[in-house]
Amino acid sequence: MATERDTTLLKSLEEVLELERAALVEGDLDRLTHMVPEKEKLIGAINDLQVLDSEDLIRVQQKVERNQALLNSAAEGVRAVAGRMAELRRVRQEFSTYGADGQRSGFSVRSHAKLEKRA
Image 1 (cartoon, rainbow, N blue to C red):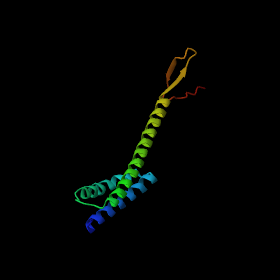
Image 2: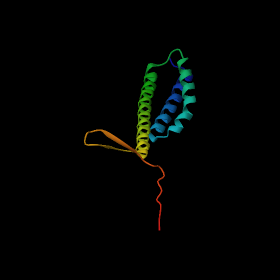
Image 3: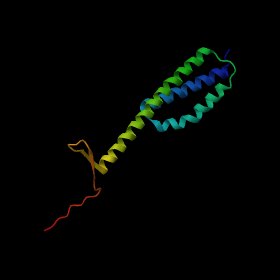
Image 4: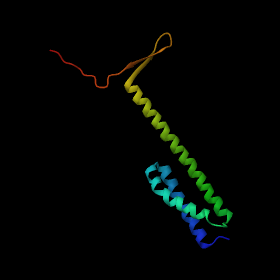
């Protein structure tokens, strides 16, 4: 049977998980870093408990899995943005075309081309 302390720990973890979910849904990744110490502390305390009601643990586990899926999606999105930005940098530095033979030709682009006026 769960004690009052056990129930309080689980409720606190559920609150942190809900805040984490809200931050993930809103895209506020900076806020996530501030939640990590509290979340780790609560999970550590729950791991030290001997017996808990399985219904409570199942509910918390479902929230953890839900947030993990959101975290994975956020990480995937960040990787996609990083890849796209790298591609844009490459495009700014080089112009590529394909010839009639199917071979790729790259031409360097001057970063600060100047236009010279002559009278």
